[in-house]
Length: 327
Image 1: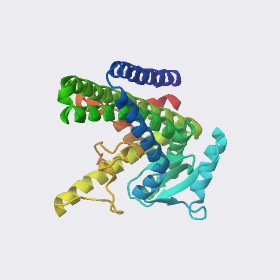
Image 2 (image 1 turned 135 degrees about the vertical axis):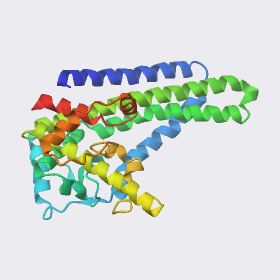
Image 3 (image 1 turned 90 degrees about the horizontal axis):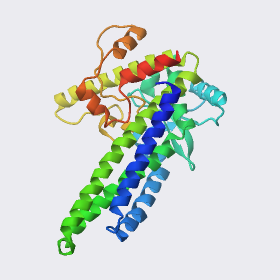
Image 4 (image 1 turned 120 degrees about the horizontal axis):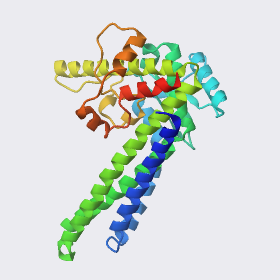
């Protein structure tokens, strides 16, 4: 996906989000909701602000993240400094997680400052040049202010969801005496717009991943090749860890977890992954480039294409092919 097409797609997705929101608000506010809408805003907006404000602490607690000492991780700090200097931004705080899962993510807000984190699993899985490209991807998220953008957009479907739930409860708890049938119809309409907005925002999220991939490919020397190889190794390792977790649960008859007692594959932390773990691992003994070509040639069937509509990350073969344009 070239730069112009990518930017036009993002503008189109934003236009769709604005259009759905405007249409939904016009229909639902056309003399029907009254104070319900006001009280929903009063509740939901502060809630999302608090979630965003305390989000970095929640991320660090759930992912076991701590500051990476410079004397222990000098190359990590040096790489982040080099990329920051090249793209003209302040160096984010460098963090480390001892999780086995290979992952990297960017987070932070005005109170904590911007942060970029890598896991022990990432450092153990990738060669350093691939870690460098992955850091470039995450620095793209920081440069594009993706955390702030996605936080703002996530408020919109939440408003419709709260409206729908409020109106459903109103119809069940005495609303039938006050045209409860109409309340139910409006509530279902609000939930419909909630669903549409979620699909549009997930589309926008996938485009942001393409945008961050482009940033990583162009901010690091030979970044396209390095990021391609890093992505397939990450997805392959995560798929194997996930399969190992299934085997552990089957053997133990309970819930599997990683070395830190966490189960991030089933948690709300999935949007923080650099790649989606729901892929099939390759057991073949292939070189890095052979592995890239193998995943690039995979053609997703109808089921995977449908599933992708509900994911935050693009399908792997699409990302690999898009990165070819920056080689």
